[in-house]
Length: 336
Image 1 (cartoon, rainbow, N blue to C red):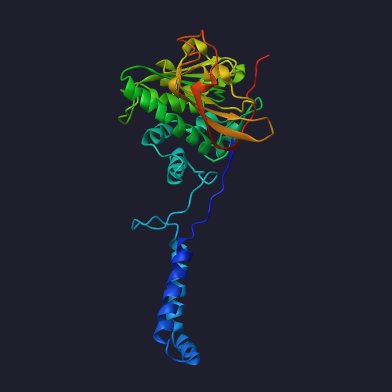
Image 2 (cartoon, rainbow, N blue to C red; image 1 turned 135 degrees about the vertical axis):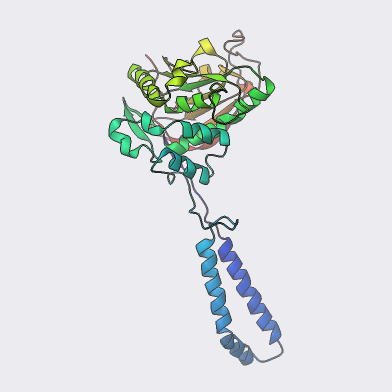
């Protein structure tokens, strides 16, 4: 998946310099207000040293303007597409520095699942690059910054469900699991508390990864077994062959749903599989056309809640939809 961002340059150093020059200019002018203009110009010539010092200070401000004002050395300004690393930790640290990974829970989970285990062998050297990579069968593994955006959007409903119903299992659906990477990260977030390396307020849970391509389902299982096999062995993560448009009603309702491919329209079957308070992150738009990532929140219970009550049909008022950012995804394949 690709994202498109525009970021404004920080202009505080320039503004500070301009204000300082204006202040000095005004002081000199006031000091010589009663004299002739020639005397004023003569004063400016005598204060060339002062003006040069001001300009030098401005250059220093520009040079260090992007550094955090915490007595640390200057840090590079990180953004999406600039978070590539040599290792998983290096990549995740840069995502955190960029402000894309914000939560300690998400960071811990990302550090536990190495992306190198979920890319093709021919792509191993690019495993920690902040870019999408092909995994075969016309599909890709999304760029790390996209996965980070998704995790930050889906963490709040998981936290809320954990607070509202302590001890109740969380349920996450990963539609279009691809090579299994994000499914495994979700698994680390909700795995048995005994296996978590850091304490977490999240309940334990189950993660279901589904894909319409049989070879990708098998690839996901193979990849997870490399270093994250405990997730499969414990039943925390499960991979299945399913039509992504129809979801996995057998395990619904879900607290969080991630859709890893672009739907041409909002998938109502998946929306009805959200639990009250649940959130779905889904890219919507035509293949090759304008696409956006949306956050869909279930705020009502007038319509069907798959797995609870399926007698009312779809009710649009049950959902609030927020457009997050512009993206480019492969299409969500619909089974014939």
